[in-house]
Length: 182
Ligand code: K2U
Ligand code: NI
Image 1: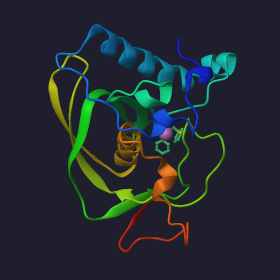
Image 2: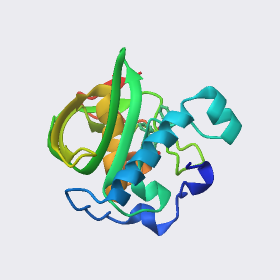
Image 3: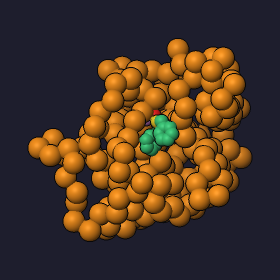
Image 4: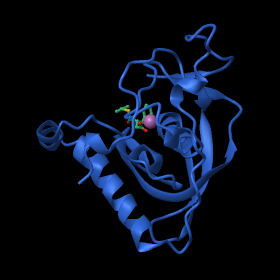
């Protein structure tokens, strides 16, 4: 099982690389990577397991965060009584809103141990094309918090960290017409 020791920390070059697309239909090893990543996120949300193995709670994970520079990501969380659980290969944002959105509490990252304050402006709505764990094409439309999480993970596949988006002059600058998500 994946543990925090397997999570690559900020400063490692793999977090700044554009990850390679994976072959479709998927290799067995890529399917196994996605399964291990989803298990880690589920474990991190289980109080007993997280305490026993000192896991930091997460809602998503991208393969570069475990040192694998491949376009693989998982997200798994409940929001507004709906489960959002995806294991994706080669995800691409194919369209997005002009409107921006950001988490009122800022963002964190399993690969960043320190707190970095500031608003992280992202697209309020996105449409993602990807392949699921069986190699089937999927089209996913997200808005609000689920869209924020998905963009955080897709950023990891492009070597982008959440703090790259924070306004350096005024970390709490609110873009025009932006939606605050509490
Ligand atoms: O990619 C990661 O490091 C996982 C992040 C994803 C994330 C952070 C902030 C905003 C959107 C996505 C972890 O989930 S950070 C810890 C966390 C846990 C619960 C809720 C929000 C953030
Ligand atoms: Ni992250």
